Structure formats: structure tokens, C-alpha cells
Length: 371
Ligand SMILES: *Cc1c(COP(=O)(O)O)cnc(C)c1O
Picture (cartoon, rainbow, N blue to C red):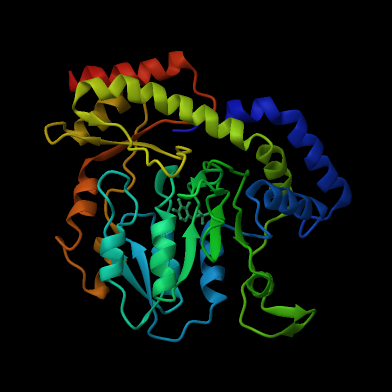
């Protein structure tokens, strides 16, 4: 699905020289490279504070912890997402309240969202699924009206641009109160292990989150709040520093791959290419299509696999029907659009190193199958 080896070949020298700086200084944790990357990412995103942490799941968890919500709090989240978004809410003892998605953009449905707001609702976690932003302007208006915190899960959309109706452009993850992202190797900005970051323009919140990632410590061995141990290590920061300089170029390469897939699949009438919302760029963390009813998805997946072509289902089971979350009482039929998507989406390989020849083999495989 991705080609991290060819990508590495092109940046090897730069990465190794940054690695040498870390190894020569032995500042493996909270070293200068972490601060350099943090400041580079702040400039890139145009955000006041970036707080690096150990992974994207922690980023979401720490953001929620910073608000000290009362017990019984409900947090609104799409059911059509990677489980991490939901997991941290449940883990902290809050109740994830699921929301439907739009069948075209696969992002959270604002009408359904509004209908799920109760007196216990304190926050919304919108997910910029597959690489394009939720309608954040509409969502922020709802949040303001109901006094809700917004924590953007931007693990799949780092680098995406969001355009407000007045033309103002900002980066995904910097619109809500907090943004949380992941540097898992296959993400658009990925390191060579685990990594994540939280971003905010709020000074006080940034201070709290910086404490929480470091055991709730205000000064050494004085702990004012319950925290966690969640750090980005210097070697990962070194990789990220090199790759951040290329993020726009990487995202552009993904968009070009997506455009070629679109052109090949649109005419079939059996494959609906990803919808592109007008208010956001799409950075194609995944290239995910919808198959028509009469296309056998498992058959296609197997047919491609037999030709050495990977394809994946993101995600086969919606969160509200996952075994772990059944106790919230959701049943099949609660989110018909989400459930329908789970039965018909399929994702094809997309990455920064895909050449046209390679892609043509994938396209031919898909077209041969659907005949
Ligand atoms: C990858 C991902 C996460 C979690 O990130 P990790 O670094 O793997 O913990 C959270 N939310 C979404 C939508 C993701 O894609």
C-alpha cells in the first residue's frame, strides 16, 4: 500500500546526517532535534503551539485529559473512523456518542451531529477522514452555539488546507480548540517508529498539555495533575524534520496518483472515485472508492492479491458495531450510511513514490476484474 523504502533512498543522506547529530549528542529524549522539529511544524501549520508526543492515540488522549471533563461526559465522534478516536474517549471513562457520516465525503454529518447534542455533551472529535477536512466552519458554529470543545483528529490530513467562506486558508488541525495528529510510518508525515503531536493556539491549554505528556509535572518532581509518559524521541524528530520539508511535495505526489485513478475509474460507472469537497484540499492519506452493488468486493480484493496488488478495507466494521463498544447499546441499522460504506469501500495503493507504470498495473487489475 505504501513504498517507504524508495522514499527513504531519496532522503537517506539527510536523514543519516540528522541521525548523527542525535547520536553524537546522545540527547535521545527531549533533545534539540525535538525542539527544532516542533518549531518547524509550528511554522508550517501556522499554529502557536505544537506539543510532540509518542503517537497519535496519545495526542487525542492528552487533548481530552486537558479539559478535565466531569464524569458522565458525552463526546461526539463519527462511527466511521479508525478505532483510536473512540478508544481514548472510552478509556478515560467518557461516553463516545456516535454520529453518522455523509455518504459522499465520508466525514461527520452536521445535522446528525446536532441531533445528538445533550446536556452531557462537552466535546466533538471530528475526523478528517482519508485526508480531507470536515466542514469545520459549520462544525465550529455548532460548537460555539452549544459551548462544545472541538478536538480535530487530523492523523490522516496533515498538510491539508481548509478554506473558510471569506477566503481565509488554514491548515487542518488548527481550526478547533486542539488538533491531534500521528506520525505513524504510513501517515502522510510519517517517522520510522511511533510519533504524534498535539497543536493549539491557546497558551493555557498548551501549558496543560505539555504538563500532561510529562507525568503532569509542573517542575521537576512536582506533579499537579495526573499525566502520562508520552514523548517523541529525538531520532524520530530527526526523520520528521527532514520529511516535513517535503510534506507539500509528498502530498502533491499523492494528489497526482489520485487524479490518475479518478480518470481511469470514473468512466466505469461501477466505481465512485473519492468526492472532493470545495472547502478543503484532499491530501489522500488513502485513495478510497465506493463500489457499486454488483461489484464483488472480496472477489476484487482476492483477484488483485493473486496478481500481487494489495488493496485494503478501511474500515470493514464501524465503531458502533465493534465488540468492544457494543455495551453502549448500539445495534445494526443505527447508522445506515456508515454501515453501507463499510460494506462497499475499498482502498488502493497510494504513496509518494508511485510511478505511472506501477499504477497502470493496479488500474488494469481493477478494470479487468470489473470487466
Ligand atoms: C493513525 C490514526 C490514529 C492513531 O495514531 P497512532 O499514531 O497510530 O496512535 C488516530 N486517528 C486516526 C484517524 C488515524 O488514522
